[in-house]
Length: 163
Image (cartoon, rainbow, N blue to C red; front, side):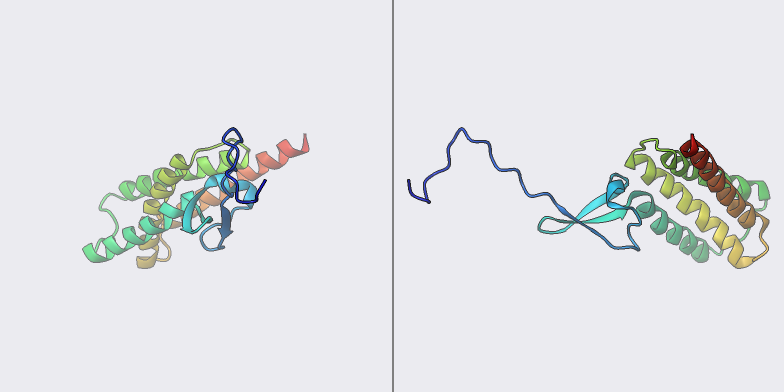
């Protein structure tokens, strides 16, 4: 039989080559075993660039929120409760989603995209308030919520690993 004979019609087709995933630290800080938390963007051939799903919406919306406030010349809300609720409530879903994923709950990228967008708006607002007043209570309260929330999830994770 010659080498250029047609392949057997009954033989299974060869599997397509697996895409090669490229990590570039500013865009993805996940290990290869956590690429399910990333968007895999085609960059040519079989290569895919891993982009953190949450960060893919967080950073653009953070920048857009700050830019919009600059263009509109916005200052603090007349009712401080509005800024407090905006910055704290919009940050909470990202903290919860991140924390649950640290506890090994399997999340979905659509939730990461949404929570990243909400966090981007919340951080954009609080950073704008911080730029205007570095002693902004709203900014520092938001930072404290995020830090202590992350520490609480890490403590629970550590205690669960010790069992």
